[in-house]
Length: 358
Ligand SMILES: C[S@@+](CC[C@H](N)C(=O)[O-])C[C@H]1O[C@@H](n2cnc3c(N)ncnc32)[C@H](O)[C@@H]1O
Image 1 (cartoon, rainbow, N blue to C red):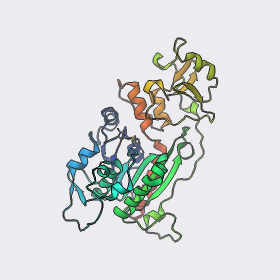
Image 2 (spheres, helix red, strand yellow):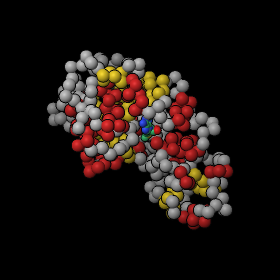
Image 3 (cartoon, rainbow, N blue to C red):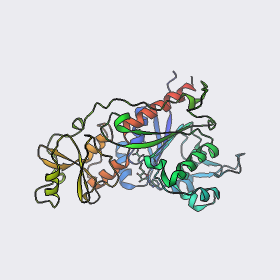
């Protein structure tokens, strides 16, 4: 098989979880976009060589994607666009925030302000402008049923009918697909260019159709336990609950096992009976709420930010910049992805694209 380093562009890049996975799969991340300044600081700390557009995707689209007057396409929801200045890519990735949008509003066409401002459509505009060979979209599992299934339907129609890509949708839990002891279900959508009429479920498969060659990752055994990822040394005092703390009594009464992870859910302690880390969320740390809690040799404490990165499967070399406030670190880790799950998808995209280069 011919080895090729595919060029990746990353939208809603956060701290670069998806970028890390694609780099591990041998790709080159050439640019990324993220508008949260703290996430950008962490991104640049780990990826100083990637061109990071530190601004809203709205600014990027309005400034750098222009009408393609030469295009023969018309009657489409998206104006034919081309990119100026932003380097070309083979693969586009996007972990866009999920927002409601109505089918009716979007059908009003490209000038509909509501539709245009939607972050999925921003991603679609990038696909239209760059025409990457393949893309990967990542989102919360609930996007599948969001707005009674209308959201995912609009996404599927747009990808197939407007952009001309195949639509391969699957939901993976990191505990079953990434050998990471975190319960985290996410929806993934992969598409290949000019293959809108093909599906991975087609009864007859053709060797040169990339969509037909793509395999959704299969479950793998979970061999890692939470103890493989938890630090054993004493951590900074600020992560411990001392006996003076207002929640201490409740925590001390309810937390008894060292083999499980607990969570403070505003007014009560929740035990995760399956010995896994609960889904790390972006609102971890806000008001002391949702941060996973454990008992270690020194007391009851929160997971520290670097442990959160381990529960997202980040490599050891990935670090938060020194001085980054813990609240920002928790938010950034919770917003990110489980790297080994994305790596399996990225490996498969790379394998399939390489088939067409043979
Ligand atoms: C769910 S996170 C994606 C995490 C990322 N996929 C990763 O691998 O770590 C969504 C990100 O989109 C960013 N975001 C939200 N609105 C944005 C906008 N208008 N322009 C650029 N980035 C935006 C947020 O700051 C957040 O970091």
